[in-house]
Image 1 (tube, rainbow, N blue to C red):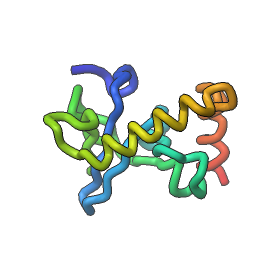
Image 2 (image 1 turned 180 degrees about the vertical axis):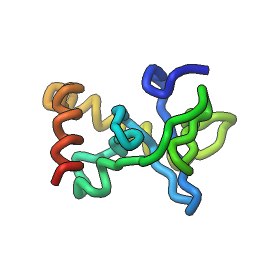
Image 3 (image 1 turned 135 degrees about the vertical axis):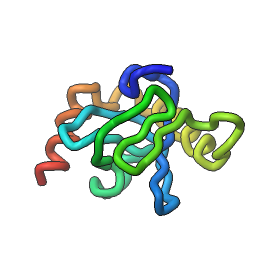
Image 4 (image 1 turned 120 degrees about the vertical axis):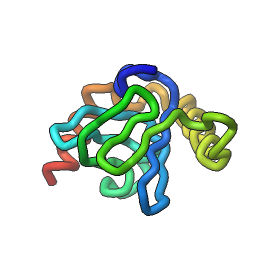
Length: 115
């Protein structure tokens, strides 16, 4: 498939404990990757901006540590996450002008992880 950071389709990360999050932005991090969840701007930073630690492997699906990253809604699965992503897209359309640029998102991630 492709490098995890070049894919433009929405992605889902699933953890061994059953937790799963839609990733709306993702950034490389020395310990793995940092991702932003939908509506991260309405959550406490510890919930909305997440470090997934571990080596990044694969070309799709990908592994980050013990977590698995797949395309969202692949094979018609995860309808609740697909709905969350659709709601996020609607939210973005409403606040597009005020939404942070990529550099600002990277700064927010750095601030969160340092704090």
